[in-house]
Image (cartoon, rainbow, N blue to C red; front, side):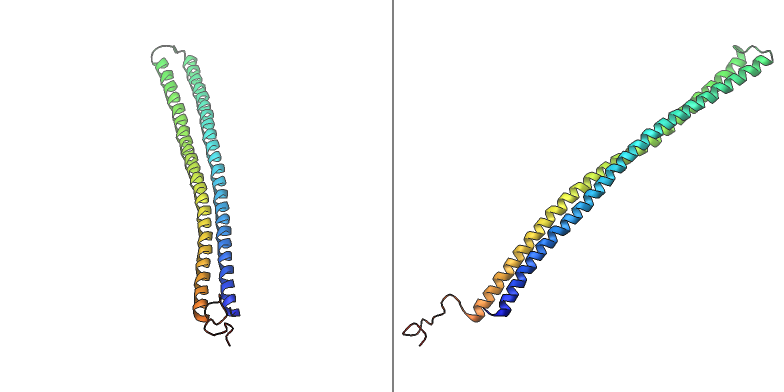
Length: 190
């Protein structure tokens, strides 16, 4: 076999091996990147859940603060009414205090409702982040499998190419199985 033919076959084999290695390494790197991003998405999920919890607590504190303001205002109203010598527990004076109480309760409810709405937004974000993490992990698995398939494809492609080059060589230069000329009387080509 000529040196150039051997070189061609050797380079084809080396190319197939390098192609397979490259496919595996590339897939591994991409899978690790996707797994890293999945980890970040899970951290972001936890942050979103913490934000939801914090928002609810802040809403409750805000509602309690509003309740204290309301009770203070009702106390002021009662003090003003009694300072003017009015009966504070009956009639229109009691109705004024009751309406202040109702407005205060409404304000507290609105603060809690707004906090719950914001907290729900964070919970939805957390679900989205978990779904993103799952998709990235599934993608990482698929990338690894695709890398393995690509590696096998490189090896099979190189094998096919080597076989093709071998067949071309055999056709061009003849068979190397029997170097003796069987057509001569002595069998030694004399």
